[in-house]
Length: 175
Image (cartoon, rainbow, N blue to C red; front, side, top):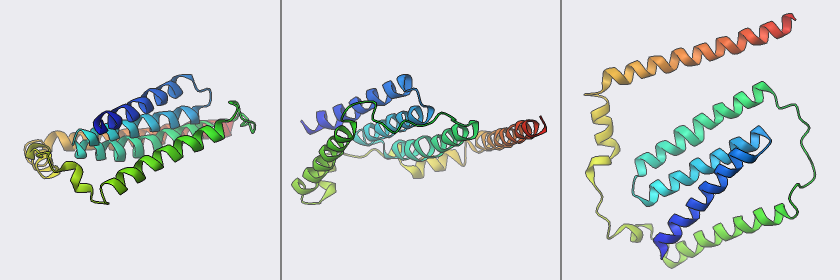
């Protein structure tokens, strides 16, 4: 039963986040829907005992890439005046209710396990093949050349994005 709950809640959040990405009119809301989708995917990775992939998902995609997306959105400029009225009646109470439900589920899980988080994973035997040590060992020995090529490519792409942004800003000021 707990497995179903730990799957269906993040799965529902993934679908809701994807719908927000597609149907929201404000680009910032689209980006926040994508963050919700990426975080929910990371939760599913954790339930599958893929902790390394979940942490990479959170740090790289939900953290760094979404920060970059929001930076670009703000740099482009969302000049529309933000609505101060609620577009959905009672959305504040709805969000507060969902937040309280999630916090109470977390509290229930913590109290029922007597704050011993390792009880959830007693029956699970962890595979050694997906540990960060083995991934890093393979990445920095057999795959070091492709790793360095990708790092150079990312540096060049970042420098090009900065140059393009600077050049377009400069042209705007000249006009």
